[in-house]
Image 1 (tube, rainbow, N blue to C red):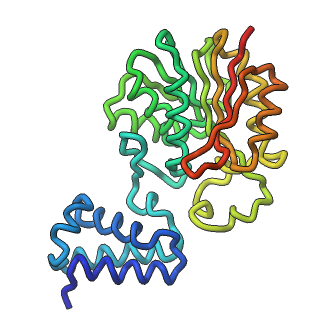
Image 2: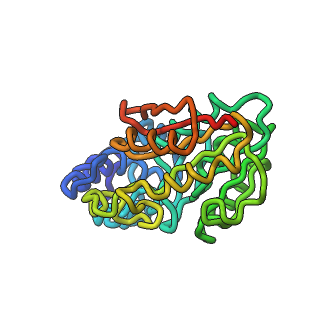
Length: 281
């Protein structure tokens, strides 16, 4: 029997709620928008429109995947971040709204005469491309250990029409050409391997190599802080995203590496999320 958009959304939200989706209504809305290739405003304006059999079958198939916990971004193949639409794949982390806070803080501290930014562990290219889209006067380089992530970031660069960014394969600084950047940014792995959240929610489907770090999640952050001074201009900034409960140890790592003006700033939920510091020679 044909079903209207309004009723399809209502039933889908109830179904996903039964399967512990943290955002059942939003998930259903995004999936149906994808099936219909329409914005959310269309669904509200034409809420009484009946779905065709093909549309309903396609929607049901996507709901089945979400019922099993698969992230919505992996199901539809993209995630909106900043002003960009980014392709996502299971080989990379899904860009999250909290990471937009890192972009905001980076843009606030980039001086007008800045000429280059380095993004370590770029994944989809989200941070690098967001900064490049706002500061077309500088060059942004993103690096990632995984070749498939580099290819995905480059695809996102092309599809978003950004010309002042480039991507390359590198384990942190290993293959980065000798250069001093105006700023270095990173959203590195920072989760403790024993953290129980790794077996919950969307992160179950995301690559563990992009999530987990030794030393209670601090090993990669420590390496980045120790090596960054060799790649920063005088008074250049380093900004790192980290866990909500890691502000104090991360500030200590920054200070031990010689950074000054070290501070930890909150995400949109008021939790510690980004620590930054300036390196002055």
